[in-house]
Image 1 (spheres, rainbow, N blue to C red):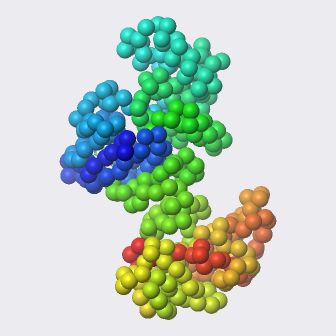
Image 2 (cartoon, helix red, strand yellow; image 1 turned 180 degrees about the horizontal axis):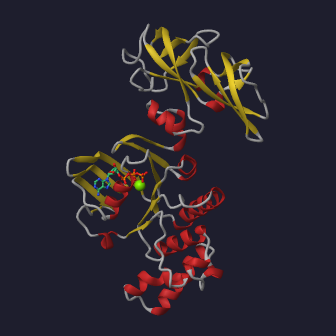
Length: 364
Ligand SMILES: Nc1ncnc2c1ncn2[C@@H]1O[C@H](COP(=O)(O)OP(=O)(O)OP(=O)(O)O)[C@@H](O)[C@H]1O
Ligand SMILES: [Mg+2]
């Protein structure tokens, strides 16, 4: 049974439609991540789950109860924001305890709760400091501590790590994963960072323009994106998309050609796309190849490219190249393989790693 359920949620601000019919659910204990471009409605959706924003239409259910009109304090939900919003004049201890004090929780119980949160977040030595004496990551931990002591049934995070530098982000990401394991509470987490999405999520919800594009586990979205938008959003560097033509079709298998392909390529549908739907002979399609699936010189299928620029990442190299149709292609090659501008080369790939999308971007 789902623990959190959104049914046909819509949100309009005057004439502007911001959320356009979102229905999703989360199981108890599940870690669900919302991703999508800026302005697609991630924060609005999260605020509607918290009750900080009214829905224009639709229903919200938490733990079996309809909470659509319930005030935020009664939803047993804690939200952690990008800005920590700590009280600067209070110690860490008092910041964490604040909500409990306001709710008139007995002193001994508050102390016990604060100690427990400090243990979970490994903040015991910091309890007597003021926020200005903390790093960004430590401040964010205090904000999470404040959420933990409320014992929410549901944690909501809105880009909690986006103010932190890369190293601290990675560290906090691991801590949030650990927190989820330790507490076992359902979490909904908004992020721009696709590494966070891939590593933290049990399931990812990809949003665009207030609509759900696709829902699935990180691997499902990576292996079988339903359209070019999801294909471009999951995976880094982005999937390469080049314009190819259908030379033959046999049920759920296509043969495609491209000026840079050494031989016609046979691709099987990932969507069980038999029948009559999908592209046919003579149609233009988009062929998708991920940078990490293109191997210099090797592979059963070969594509001829011209190098523009190479960037060594130490253990691997990013090669920016062009196809014979002057389309950009990025390859991620193992080791250090610096190719000079104008150098032509072949890359190989496995047909099982190739994706085909029709002219409207739908996966075949
Ligand atoms: N109070 C408001 N009045 C009018 N429009 C609003 C209001 N709040 C948000 N919007 C609009 O709703 C859309 C969704 O906003 P939201 O903050 O949910 O996006 P987001 O996905 O969280 O973006 P970001 O990644 O930049 O945080 C945006 O186009 C925004 O301009
Ligand atoms: Mg936002």
